[in-house]
Amino acid sequence: MRYVLAMHVIAVLALENVVAFDLAVPGQVFGSSTTERDVPLYETRVCTGPDGAVTSAALGRMRLESPFGLDALATADTIVVPGHDGLADPSAEVLDALRDAGARGARIASICVGAFVLAAAGLLDGRRATTHWMFARRLARRYPRVKVDPSVLYVDEGQVLTSAGIAAGIDLCLHLVRRDHGAATAARTARRIIMPPQRDGGQAQFIRHEDPPDGDTALQPTLAWLEANLHHPLTLDDLARHARVSVRTLTRRFAEQAGTTPQRWVSRARLRRAQQLLESTDLPVERVAAESGFGSPVTLRAHFARHVGASPQSYRAAFRSRAS
Image (cartoon, rainbow, N blue to C red; front, side, top):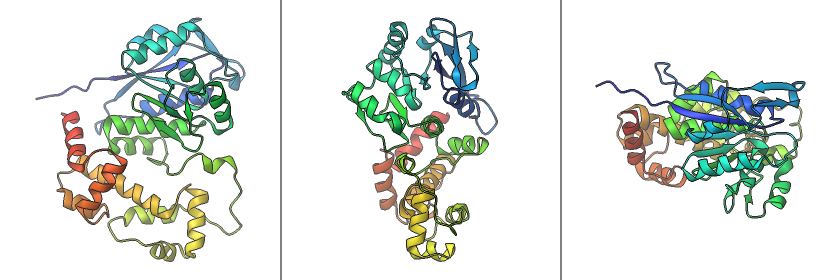
């Protein structure tokens, strides 16, 4: 029997003074997401507000026109709201369209200061959310019912998601691809746009940034070695020995360049490996645990329960049924 994938429609809401980078991110990420046979998984539609056209100050007053208006939000599966300069509240028509979309169950996400639009529509009330760290206090003051967390790259509240500044929108969109189609598809998309499948750490690492001391080198060779050796037991001493530095120096480099600890980075990499194996192979859970470096099914199940919210068996069943 031949199955046809239903196209998931992404509506990107471009408001006046839209941030050009934020606007481009969803089209680039979702447009690069395909099956292994290069069948597109998403259709991205840029939607403008009531006036039918918007400008972006970032590129010399670039003017953007689109055949899609607010009515396109009514049929979209996912709506992404990029940031816009000025942070002025959008029109009542825009807010009503977003509320209606939320009421019918559409998934709604924001990039950077696009969180202000979601908050103005009441979609973030009582929810945890994030935005660019420079505007987090303003968001919290203006909308006190929103639980603002300025330390993370993105927040997934199920139906409503928010991301931090600029490039964190890429992390959010890759996360949505991972949610929809699994780790393997997200990794394939990330390779096409030259991004890591999942960055560890949060935007707190960018609030105050100091250049690493002279003599520090890129962490990438160590990360590549780790990816190739996840199935082995790995200690901090092992990592430091391979990197030819002290444990203290290695820990500092991870904090500066990866925004996390070596142990946490390895744990997240092993989780991604386990997800890929569950999605793409028929290996028993015992083998998946061994191949991904968790050692035992008990440890694997504990990590899945904590970070995925499902058992390895139910995760595999969900993605197998989705593929069929």
